[in-house]
Length: 291
Ligand SMILES: C[S@@+](CC[C@H](N)C(=O)[O-])C[C@H]1O[C@@H](n2cnc3c(N)ncnc32)[C@H](O)[C@@H]1O
Image (tube, rainbow, N blue to C red; front, side, top):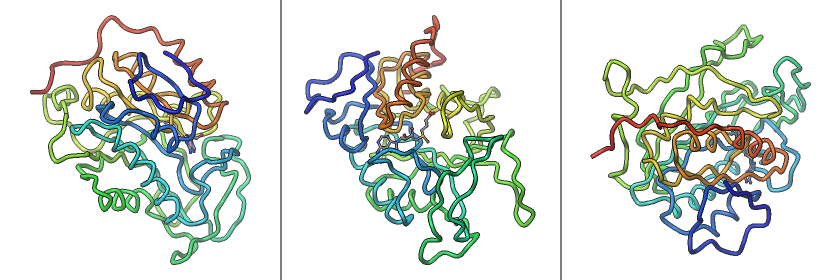
């Protein structure tokens, strides 16, 4: 694995090994060769939840529409670098309007959920409205030409308790499967249920906060089926919002090449440390190549 803090003008001839770039996702994607990645697995910063305190960050836009536009633009760059049979696995959570409360004190018990920042209630929405960000983004991507193939519910059996008494406690996020073309690489055998049934759309996976990461990290168990269904050993996998590098960890374990892009140098450091500690296993969890 290689780390690049000053990206070159272009990587037209390709990359020799898995690489983590410290960069803005949109800018770096333009430097990568087209048709390189068999799949992209990513979790963009959620809207209005967190100020990562760094210029160029996504998620601090005033309005959900501006946030969605910005992400659609980044995913245009992703589409260019995906193979024609490539898939995009997009994890995204929802949030509520703040009711015009400007600030919510950090939550000491659960720093990941603490909000350092809250956007004002966007136009057209009311206080306490669920914003519906995942579906706003999914529809916008569909309109931009992506095939929306599945919504997968990531159910969190260990979700954080909420003090609300006027709605159920939120215990899920979305994972959308989007594709560049009508036909695409999808190894259904690799992710069959233990009974041999085709994988269902509700995945129950506990959250696993990563020490030192002050944002929501993917659990490796959520990333693994995406890697196994969306790529073969040796393929290239992309995560343009790399955070603590969970996609890199799973790719090391499943012998995929990968590119991670992360804007924040602190998180890059966490990711590099974490990846260096991975002991590559003798065998991957691949069962059989798809036809
Ligand atoms: C929800 S976190 C990703 C967590 C990751 N899936 C993990 O398992 O650790 C989103 C990440 O996107 C990064 N980010 C925000 N704006 C960015 C940009 N313009 N380009 C690249 N990364 C960005 C944030 O610093 C944050 O680490």
